[in-house]
Image (cartoon, rainbow, N blue to C red; front, side):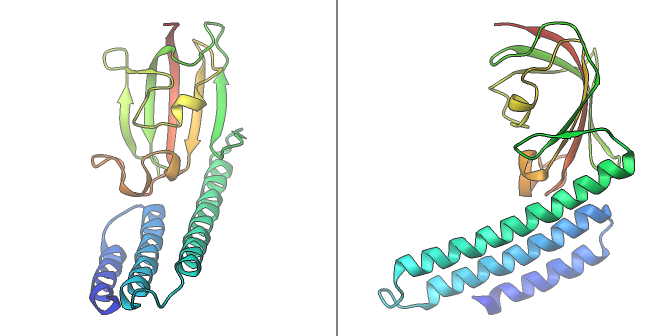
Length: 205
C-alpha cells in the first residue's frame, strides 16, 4: 500500500512546490500531504495484518492517537498563523472560547440576534492574503437564518448576541470554515477566512 501511495505523495509535493499559491495555502497543503502519508500507514497496518492477529482495541487506540496528534499539530500551527495575521494587521480582536476571533468595529443599536433570527449581511469574505472571495451588497446580500446556515456553520454561533447596525469582523480557522476541501469554487482547501460584515437587518421569526 505504501509503495502505491508514495508516488502520489511525491507528485503532490512537487506540484505544491511549483504551483502559484499563497504562501499560507502552500504550507497548509504540504501538511495535508503528511496527513495522507499517515493515512497510508494506517491502511497498511489494517490491510497487512491477518485478521485476528492484532488486538482490535490496541490498533484502534493507536490509530486514534496518531490522528489526534496530527490534528493537534495542525490546529496549533494554524493558530500561530492567525495570531501572526492579527498582529500584522494591528487588529483589536478577541478570541472566542471555541477558537475563532471577533471584533465589533462599530456597535449597532438595533435588534439583538438570537437563534432562528433572519439576518441580512453586507460585506466580504477574504483569505488571509487579502484575496476577496465573495462580496455582498444591497443588491446581492448574504441572507441566512441563524442556526440553519449550512455554508460557514460557525456563523450560527458567531452572530449570536450581535446587534443590527453593527459592523463586525471575524477570523475563522479553516476547520470552522470550509475545511480540508474548500468550497469547490473560490475558497481553496484548508483556508482560514476573514469575514467583514455590516449587519444590515435582523428579523425575529
